Length: 217
Image (cartoon, rainbow, N blue to C red; front, side, top):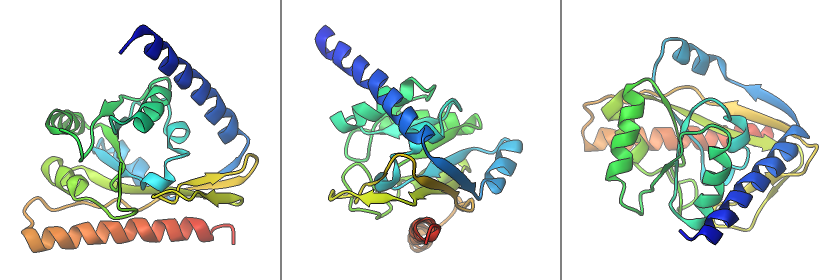
């Protein structure tokens, strides 16, 4: 990466962090369902947060300064998130299902075996929208980590006309951040049971979106 390009991305990270911080701080935020997560962390269990691509807008701000490892696509869009999140103390890891991921996979397993936390976007970076890819299920199987669905919604929201129906909100909105119930995955599932588990987690994430979107109705 050239010096000019590095300088450009540095500015993107700084400006992006400031804008997102001001945007999020203008809201009145309610948090729902955090108790089960806190109990897991009290017991030092590894955790994988699952967030649909269309619901990641609040994520860099919400999980800041907790030393969480997000898996971020090596794409240019991913670079924006990476630059912002690095400045909030995340252990940024680059990789995706559409790129070589063996090195990233081993790094995620290492982090979880140490009792750490990950953020995975299970339908990213290219979709299909809100269709859960099996990688997070396999990772939970191999590490014993709990899957925790996460989403948000807002009183004054806007869905963009993008492949992921990206959700944004107006400044000074009311925002609700919702933790789903932790899901554990058995380590010895056959192929049919594995697919059943994948569908179950996908459904939980979809229902969590519905719950969040109805909160302000």
